[in-house]
Picture 1 (cartoon, rainbow, N blue to C red):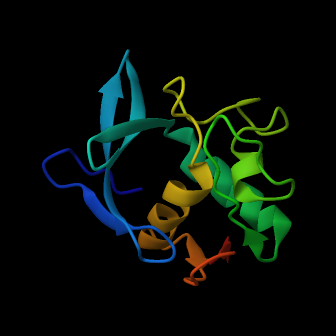
Picture 2 (picture 1 turned 90 degrees about the vertical axis):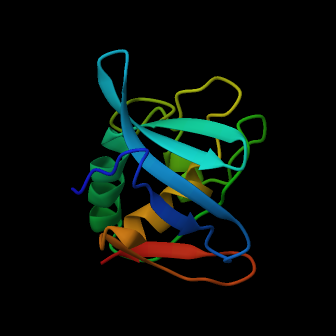
Length: 133
């Protein structure tokens, strides 16, 4: 996987195309993390989420609803968001690393997966889905 630095981040848009944000790879506490910057808000995700999400989508074999939700809100079952915080995923919980800002996995990770050529997304106003490419 291509790893971009803070100086040359991926410039992405949310699936509906309504918000712009950037992502880059950085080392934090001796581990690589994905840094997602949305305006002045910075979210951190475990970098393993890219390969793990790709493997899960391959196994799933069909479209999956994104279901983005804040950490404080429950995620709809069967969505990418629910998987990104499930005890049944490979990290056995949250891929988001910053307490209070661990959600929105189903909003910010899918466009990166699409940019990396690993997934295909729908780009509707609501109810977007993704599948392995």
